[in-house]
Image 1 (cartoon, one colour):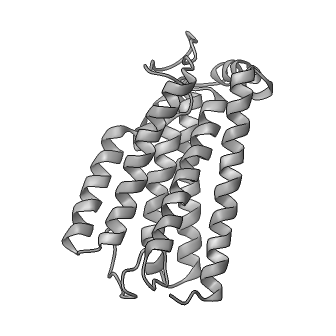
Image 2 (cartoon, rainbow, N blue to C red):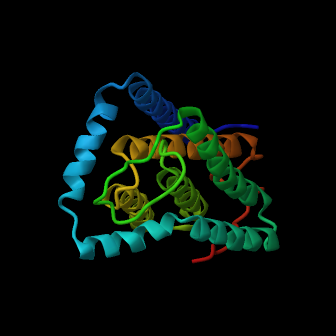
Length: 232
């Protein structure tokens, strides 16, 4: 298979960001295990933020955090997966399932490796169970909404639309991650770790999808055909 210059550049960018994400997660994990810098500052930042929360803010971020809820992620994956299967976009379907299911399983594995307890603050608006690092909402939302970006991106003709799509993705997973801090159910390190691990897994799946695709010009188009309009 002949690989053109643009493909080589895009693969290089993916690998570079993938490596940076992995290094970021490793640094956060090391801080957590050795009780250094970020993990030491976590309670201080958490308490500072919770002292500045409001009832209106808590209600708003409770809605935002729901966008990273298991119900939303699972429902979205199933619906989009059915549509991709119906249209016989198998490569896209594999990418979606590998990214979302893999991110969820990896999150469980990582939580059970680090076994970090959640913040115990009486000012927290909600209570959450399970281990804290890395944040599942942060990790799985950046992966799920990120893979949607990769699915939709080649179908957008203008760079304005593509830029807005990426900005929307960053804003969404950023707000979901921040909501976990605002509501008092995670430490800052948990959210940063979730973002870095989720991005690392997302890019690994995209990279493998690109390498395994035969003659694709985009990250997910099969047999160089236009996949048609994606669901909105």
